[in-house]
Image (cartoon, rainbow, N blue to C red; front, top):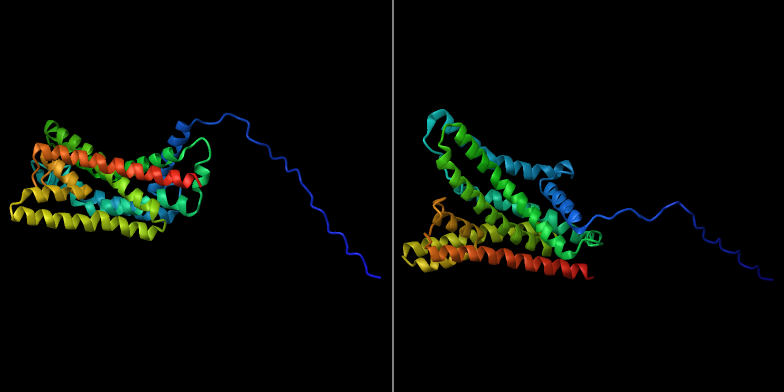
Amino acid sequence: MTQAPAPRPGGVIHDLGYRGYTGPRESQAKVAWTLFITSLRHAYGLGRSGRSKVLPFILLAIMVLPAVVMVGTVSIIGLPELPTTYAGYPSSMQVLVSLFAAAQAPVLFSRDLRHRSIVLYLARPLSSRVYALVRWASLTAAVLLFTAVPTVVLYAGGLLAGLDAGEETLPFVKALVLQVLLAAMLAGITGLIASWALRRGFAVVASIIVLIVVVGVVLIVQAIALEERVSTIGEVAGLFSPWSIHNGVAGSWGASNSAIVDLSTTWTAGYLAAAVVVVATCLALLVARFTKVGAR
């Protein structure tokens, strides 16, 4: 006679006392602002591990150090003006600025996609469009802070050294306006690259190629065009790099002499329009990217 199998133990449900949240929910604007502040902090490693703070703050220290040296030189020697222009300083340090943008864009755009934590952000009430725009805005603010800090050091140090405030203020304001334009372009380009190249190494390398290697090619083309006296080719080539756009507009505004090609009024407007197109295109592609991810 076969023995009947022993009955399997049944499952047990334990009431742990969890309750759903029934309190007030924050609006989308409040969530977006919190995400902006958190993203800006994360771009500098704040609120993350100690290792995450090393690179951004080392780059920032290297970025500020020459400005401090220049201010000290003006104060000690008594120079009648700063050794560089406010708008020209970021251009002379463009490799550092590009490295910072390339290195921190994956922090804001790649990690959530790679680890699929993006679905938590896109739970109500935050939409994928707002998420993409806020991440871009936070990276723009981080890059702007990176370039504005040494500019403020130059301006404040120059005034303390006895330079005329009336002569220094207008170039300083022009430089900040140009830095906003530059930061918006760099954030758009690196953010778009990082949203597709989910591995940080790939995103950083691709961004460096676009921001540094392409800039070198543009400068070579502009130099050849200047040598051959074919100014139109140099002006058109400048449209393919955010740095050449920044330098070209700065030169036409009399804020810097970093540009190789001198722009006419018409070309200055064209460069400004190109900057707007670059930012708008990157934002549209970012929104499309995260809308597609959010729809899965």
